[in-house]
Image (cartoon, rainbow, N blue to C red; front, side, top):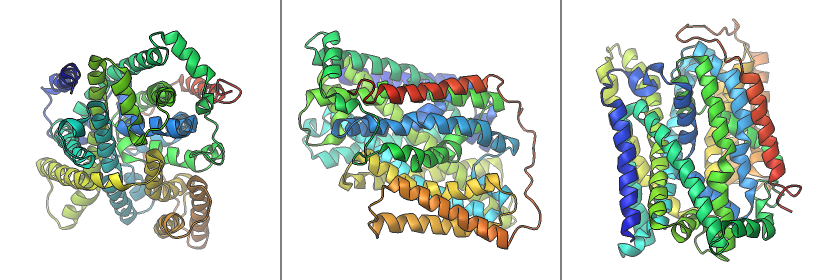
Length: 532
């Protein structure tokens, strides 16, 4: 194990933690709002970086690089096309949440349907986080770190055992971040990591191209643009993991769910000082998503020109880092990977605790007629975070047995929870008389339908197209029930006037520019661009 790389890794990791502690050392968390929403005081830069880095985990580095190496750049669609969904969320959905002073996205379901629907969806979110999101973040982080430092070789243990150990190390560090620092500490870490991540991406690109070009980065650029260019194609065919047609079906639905209703993401936007700040923060996060090809795709392209046949393709990214980077840069990138894992794990843990405490624990106590103090909420939120973290750390190593492309596997798992929840949220947004029973039936139908089509029946249809079919059928069922058994009174959203709802006046032209850049990226990475 290279001493310089390990020393740099420890130094950078310590530096990020020290800056976060220094910036939050005078902050005492005494309320649930302080722990979960940073007292609704975040600036637009804090919101933007928090949104971006909560979305970015080691899974992005690991999954995207593997997909490009095995297939092509069609995997880019997940990140780049999300800009369109983010613009819609900024314009239409975030104002609804802020108007109702909502702390969690299921709060809308209570307002629109009833408390039972809110509790049911909160429970689904918690199951999704504990058995899917948190384990994936831990596993991908462990895979990336082992690939850079080759712990399994140096410790003389099996690959599986080294992944176990690293999962528990990342999980314990991330738990401490969330439990002791709350959302504010996580946001500060995101700001620091933002600078480090883009610096690391540029340096990795330089040394990777230099390696391909035998010391000349310009020759490296010429090489990747003149050979094996089919890997640059972002317009996926029917045989690719992400066919281009899926962008307009299930992918847009999953992106709308993720950026508009996923608690771990929306919580960052709800912590903003006002609507204008939230909208500017989302626009800033969009810029980060458009830079995704530089951050996550290029290492896969470099790997295509370095390795003819990798045995373990999930280590594509870490192999590139290990083989082309000088020791100091390897340690630097490893620290960024660990930071990305922590700043995805910690917000997810914080959001899981938010859902449990505010939507399940507190209502249960109040129903029993027992007073609930802020100290009681804080104490039990930290207990729940430790429980959820430990459970995730036990589940994460089981991903060693997952088959196929890791990124596609991750998205399939996410879909099982996302589309059923988004379907009833969508109907709630656009109708006023559909009753609560329709939401419960729709949720059960969509969830069971997806499980049956993915695990029981082989339809031969891409899972993203299946999601669209189920989404439309769920909406139809809910509308029919709404027609037959409408609510007596129309739903009317209440303005609780907690934050200023004046929108950002320059949002339209800026959002238009973002969408134009999104389209140009797809044209650049296509057969009419550089993938000739």
